[in-house]
Amino acid sequence: MIWSFAQQVEEEIAGELQRIDRLVDRNQLKTLDAFRAERVSDAHLFGSTGYGYGDAGRERLDRLFARIFGAEAALVRPQIVSGTHALAAAFFGLLRPGDTLLYATGEPYDTLRAVIGSAGAGTGSLREFGVGFDSVELRPEGRVDLEALISRMDRRTKVVAVQRSPGYAWRRALGVEEIAEVARAVKERNPSAWVVVDNCYGEFTEDAEPTEVGADLVAGSLIKNPGGGLAPTGGYIAGRRDAVNLAAHRLTAPGLGAETGSHEIYRLYYQGVFLAPHVTGEALKGNVFAAAALGRAGFQCAPEWHEPRRDIVLRVRLGSSARLLQFCRAIQANSPVDAHVVPEPWNMPGYESPVVMAAGGFVQGASIELSADAPMREPYIAYLQGGLTYSHVKIAVLRALEEMTPKFDQMTLT
Ligand SMILES: *Cc1c(COP(=O)(O)O)cnc(C)c1O
Image (cartoon, rainbow, N blue to C red; front, side, top):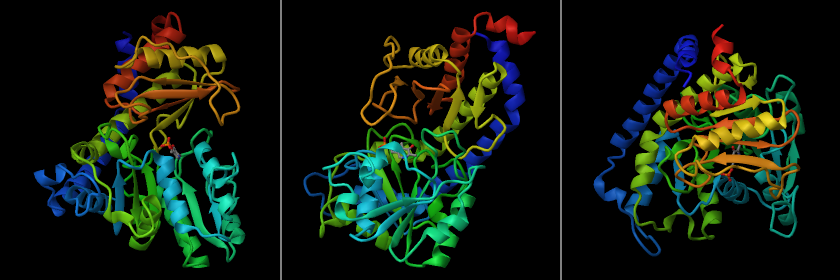
């Protein structure tokens, strides 16, 4: 191992690592106090069966999330299969035929395009139900174009959506401060329009969540940040009570809403969200280390190590298909599960170019665990995210560097 190189990197990033520790302290305090205020007890960790009427574990978990997110209500469900499902329930719950969904952050994340209806047909998309879609491009420096957004709103605009993390785009993630600005501007233009935030990858990366600063609803995945690496599946929605209710009636069935749904044991969800501030901190620290180490080796990263982090994704420009493949394979080879498997690029449905994915986690597809994926096209960018422990990210990145840069040790120490 090139420990001496790692040490140099860590001396450089010490201030950033400390800042993340303090962020973790504040979010851990918030989370702990939510557990205390909600009087979570042993009985809540064990759920129910069947319809789940009066499932105390489910109800308390909803209230716990609501409190952590500074929201009136929440839905936390193993039955929500992914972040896309949570967002779809929110959109279908709030929008009616004739309404328009307006994205404030340009084209939405890939999987949302089928929900909206700009990709695929015959699947019951928003478009098939007569819901319109529009989007406003971000300004060149990556901020929301408030003027354009406000002028694009009309009486049909029922939901304004904000995507916090960029997904497969080389832009910065949006800060909670900026989301607050968007919410203020939207409400000033039309107080009855809903502001919905795709919160994926953003949870616990800042002091506040969008619902604490004016967003009506947030939705996300439990196999990302808020599941703390322990939640085996699931998604969540949190926000204003009326908005959460509308999403709940869509998620289950009209009339059933949030009152039904059982699960036998909720322990991993409670324990996961308790660990989430820490685990997100580990991923953030790993992300800072990776940016500094890869940056020193000449690979451009976004964000750079000293830039503020508002999600847990690092974009790394590898420059060639060979390097990109080497990088992703090294991440896979340094995973706790399936380390012996060699990732190959494949044509995933819905993507223009073949995609290579490195994911050797305990939960299938969990991207709070260390993972890397990349579309095989110019300029060969890998998206590195997650990491249950800082140390694991550090080791995997060092091994990848050794792999990609022969004689790396001598090269960087001179
Ligand atoms: C992960 C993610 C989603 C949802 O993806 P799922 O795989 O369905 O959980 C949506 N938006 C963004 C920005 C994401 O990162």
